[in-house]
Length: 440
Ligand SMILES: Cc1ncc(COP(=O)(O)O)c(C=O)c1O
Image (tube, rainbow, N blue to C red):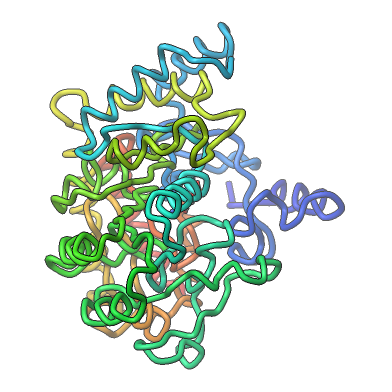
């Protein structure tokens, strides 16, 4: 049967008078997908099925929210059990305690745990906590890092023309959105990542004013950009040396790089760490964890953190089953995803070389991204903005869809290997990529 997305097209037409960009997030609409997005109907394991019945190997996996793939039987069972006995009580529950204990066991710094629903909420709580505990106003973030869509940190996380960025010593603070509180970014310091000297001078320029430094463990919103050797430990040391709290945003890397995230992998001890995405295996579950003496400031709303849906029973059941599966057989799930990703990245690199296309594949474990560039590596935001051909990447990914492979068409995002992916998925993807490269 010839590939058609006619039903998606018709559904898209219907959205025009009611939904904005056909969805509920600007990263899902036609801007990324060309004329109209594909409407997905169901998922199973590593596969997605669209409204026209087309089947895809899914490497996007809900932007990383599905570490076990789609409809894992133990998640289905856990969610069904919670749904049939009460999805949410907004009271204390034993399952919330159970998940918190699991997190404490696998995440080195998780002396205390507080649940939220999204990565954005967890980061908002971390920032308020840092300001409350230190009594200092400023938060230092890095160029190219995204920490959610709240006002304080919504700067320098969009891809921009290199000429707009200003000097690395004094980056131009370009907000990512209209409508921000007029003073929202006054207390936000933006510094290029992977450059210790620039960080040191930014700290020196604001003595006694910085409450926290927040960083992603791996820059995951400009493709995949790993930290340079020893960089994160040095950031942590600089923070400690200046009485600044060190916040590690593991919304993307948590429950993916290692059971304890980048914190475990890079041997860090952040004061606070935020998690989201993969924690709920598809349900909205996020967590703020950290040092007891810092986290305890949340008591009695001293630093206020509320939320009707926090720690929902249905989300906690899903998280509990998820963590159980991920850590089973001495963390076998992590060995699986690293292994599958290693072969896929290696073979994709070889394929692009064989076809004479300038490309690199950057990865850390199961997170990877193809970058269409003639550079040997992309090491920071500025290099990403300057040297990565995002238009060509979008064309490449869209040409994979008719060949049964789905990934985000945005070069600034990345692909993700889950427990559900198999060697067959890798073979199918490599064959599709080869065909796609011949056709574009
Ligand atoms: C590093 C990081 N932090 C925070 C967030 C925000 O998470 P959420 O979309 O769940 O609000 C994201 C989302 O992509 C992220 O990548």
